[in-house]
Image 1: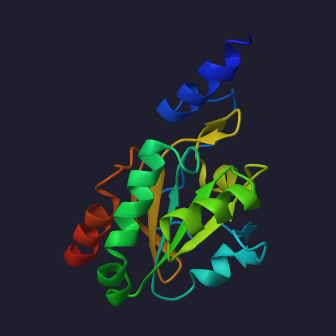
Image 2 (image 1 turned 90 degrees about the vertical axis):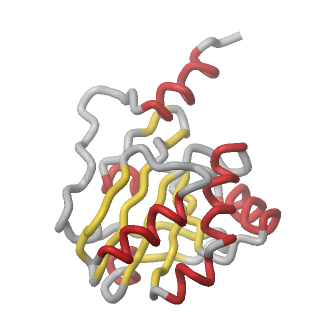
Length: 169
């Protein structure tokens, strides 16, 4: 049994990364110009998708795990309130397209999930990841510029946190 198999996911979740990891993008930064496939296998260009209005890009360690399910369901359950504020939501993990689709279908998630299998989106945002698990973080953009980031994003409070930020803007 390889102990790294069990330790690596925990390390990624608490933010331990390989040497040379990038810093998270700073407030007022533009949406990184990176693309990825969604749960349907369709290419999504984040900078284009986030050019107008609010866009939430949130990262989670692993599809269909307890904390990640709470986080996604928080956004699902408040989806109407979030979209009334004009927010588009993108969930990102290092899972496969198949795993993202199964997760979206199982929990009836009405937003886009990105399958960042190679970690390119996480790297562009400066999100720590190791052994296929990304750290839970959230980034809110308005008209293509970062207006809020949560580097220790909550699970069941993700939607409430985003709505609170928007109310203050």
